[in-house]
Image (cartoon, rainbow, N blue to C red; front, side, top):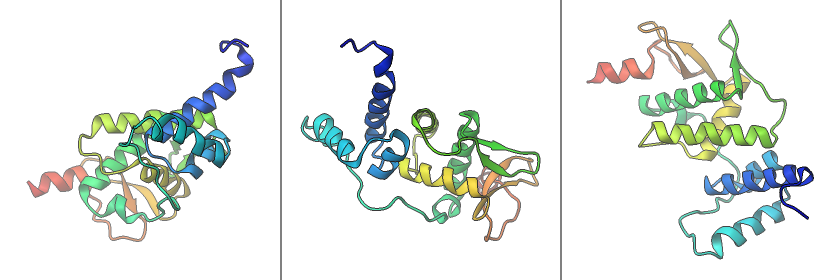
Length: 185
């Protein structure tokens, strides 16, 4: 058996994605949806490569993934970071924005390529924001929430014509987070 054989490429890609997502402290269900690996296999990967090696800085989150949307729009700083993530999702071909400003997913359901693109977008977000306020699971929630166009949507700023993430049920003064932060200073 040679590791370079094509017949092992798919399994190796699943394995690499699972390790990458564990490093981002993704929950087991999120990893399972993208990799197709079983819960038991994911837990064993964590135990083998992280817990038993003394890498204590990577924690396993338990419970359900976050579902609330207020975190994205509560403060202009969070709103700006959520908007950055949505832009990265669009450039990673995870989302598309149509002419009516509606957001739609490009993938019918998550797979390994989807997971790698999601990780790349999140890693770029971490590079762009020194004070990253959104964990990987919050980024996962944002991707799904903005895709539905019901609670979150992309609004357009009246001052600079930039798109930004906005709560569909909140009061919107049509000002993007950058203009709000500039106005404060």
